[in-house]
Image 1 (cartoon, helix red, strand yellow):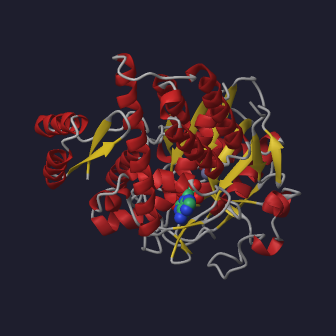
Image 2 (cartoon, protein in one colour; image 1 turned 30 degrees about the horizontal axis):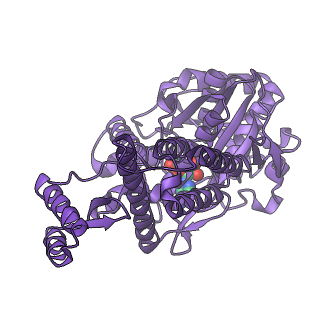
Length: 481
Ligand code: AMP
Ligand code: ZN
């Protein structure tokens, strides 16, 4: 197996993956959802890639400790630490408490993960349950002299981090923000960010806590640092998120970690490109988002979206279109039909109804496919190439059906699926009614007896009932139309 290589935004290079601490235990932190609205396909593109990356690491025999936060406080409508708190605003809109909102949308998020076979993180940590840890981070920053006070909170002085403006090799212009902002006159630098915001004097917030600086709430950029320190230590292996975190959120996390530990929190910083809709990032705020439930209502298997995502390269953007997902749905059904056929062959082999030849030799061919599949994934997570290898393998097997051991084929498909998670072998097929099974058997016998006219009539009867017979040289399968 080739060495894992991954593009590290921190160095702007594709690097060999070498763990930081214990050779086999990988710490992985992924920025989670702000739980004030439904999870949409845009978020899920990032979560699918994170899931695949994790499964690739596991295939390479690493153990992965995966931590994700849910943001249920402190994310304001503007990146410049102004505007409304998104959670409090939604609570007002829905006439519910912030806790109810967080609970409801966290459940929705988890449901979505399940639909796409995305494994849950080992630790899913809400920011509101880690206030003490965030206060501790701010205290450390204060002791080391990185903070200052304004009329609305405690701020981080980004000028004190020498390389702040070149983190991720960005242009200074790219960094937020010289926008006009309410408290700009009090900020020392436009890139400074709030660590602790004071509750407004004339308003009682639902989520606020006592702190050494007064009643208020932590700024959004501190929660990930506090939770990563707590669960993964001061310096760990991988930190992931969408590319929207490159300009502000991740540099701010790195700045805090650098100030406290002298290290940039994580060794590898991995970012995923956006899912676009009408040439814009699919987002909660733009309103034009599509959810898994919308796919289900269109009778599209949610895993077709997973396949759609895997067919695109993680560092590029992908354009959403329902047609493209529908065509992934067809491709997924073809994959399922293929595995059904192999299952049928397995039984025929067991019952010694078919003779197989050369299977030992082809076990090696299957292994070679598996090896190139893993190598494609190890090569900077090249999922489109991995999928192409899967199709190449099915094509070759289809051409020589009776010289591949079906048990080995199913095993190989399962190996592929331990990363792809498309349910290739274990998918639920619609149960075929016994009447249809009986008719199919009758037709098969009639065909053998060369009574083709009668056999065709039965095929028509089966088709009219919504099923189709797929004929092969020595056997058949039945599937729903
Ligand atoms: P949010 O809840 O907006 O903080 O997003 C949670 C995660 O989903 C972050 O890692 C975002 O970068 C990612 N994300 C949000 N929208 C998209 C999108 N349209 N395409 C890809 N990733 C996204
Ligand atoms: Zn984060």
